[in-house]
Image (cartoon, rainbow, N blue to C red; front, side):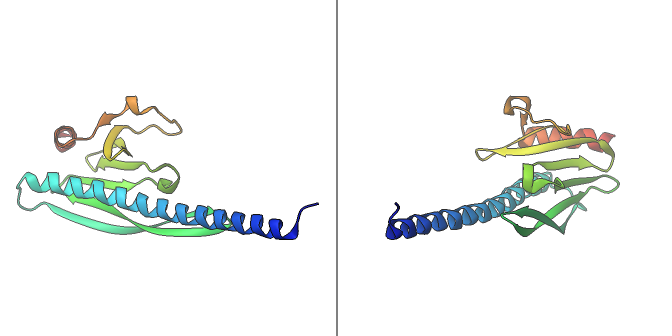
Length: 158
């Protein structure tokens, strides 16, 4: 038979584990928000480095919700729009961002050419958006200043 003192001790340990899982999950939500904002900051810097007048950067807040641990969690994320005149570049979290952490990058000039961006070990990678498929990191290209400019140039010419 289990001693009541031992049972209380085990219950207390499990409660601490449950509380830690919740705290870890809430930290993951904050990390998702930080990763999105960091990418948007990179893009803002790359656009600023072009030193072109009249480029406008705008942010819109969007609410994302997620059900977990029998609770509803809500987080506000920002969608970034960079206006180059008739062509607008969009950097926004995927609708299910809190599940898969994919960020979408596309231009108004060619909305069929959508890139998905993921973060891995502090670096960003991109590929053509494919729904319903998980891919290995080797299928993605690094998103660097140079690759960003190549993508942007293609969209501006479209």
